Length: 350
Image (tube, rainbow, N blue to C red; front, side, top):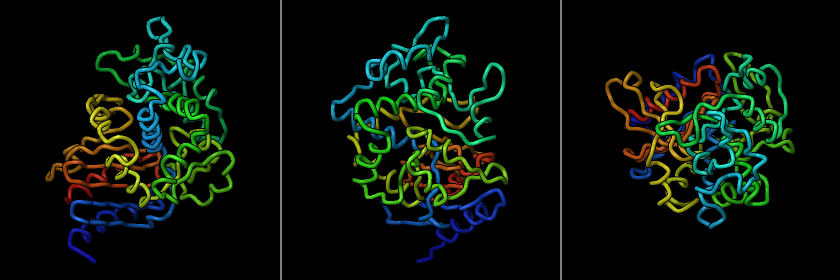
């Protein structure tokens, strides 16, 4: 049934969907307290959710914590081995790697360099290389790249945080070591199976033939073809999902269906800026917060959103003050901010 609110949301979404630098647009919103549900585009079409994958990985870690299989303050080296952690943070000339905890990895406070977008001393980034040619890398290779980069600070330096995909490669190693299985198996048995998320799965080297099922990702106007690269990022960027499945997952995440609900208070108790001081993004423990700038919604302030975003122009956020669950993708790497403008303007109508 059409309502004035739904019509306005459709008009807003249509403006973004019509942009030449947006492809396979989809968005979905649910407000459980009112029963309101809305979607635009093909919400059943799968797309790569990029770093929103981290939210799923965090949920698995919290399950393992609840089962007593690990504690957040355990040094990761005690789980994955000292060899893996050695040399990852040598700030101040000291090897801090062996004492970095699972908590510091989840909260981006480890000070470990970012293999993905951090500029190398000689220039260029891993992302630059990936965009030039598809390739495949092991977890050891990706983690090893961080050893050649400068660490921004010592672990848990007061008031410091740094967004690093290396942290999440390490969290993935923790999950695999503790469970004795793959990241894909943990996703399937612990999240997608129990929740009935039939359109959510992980791209792996064994499922590269399914790459064509997924919506393309644009870099400007160029469609990217990166099956092997994406399959190299199981804990930090390899999940495929749909807008509809994403909303279902997010509701379960915040409702305590996946892990004890009281963990959320700890996960959102402390927020640290992980980009520039002016960036509206903060990081908690396994979750991201988007503080909507007044420039985006000057007349109607929008409360903070909690969830995660992805480098392929994806967003998945819960707005606690308005009981909203919002999922959207524009499938665009260059103008990633588009999806944040979109979700802010959609949420401003409530």
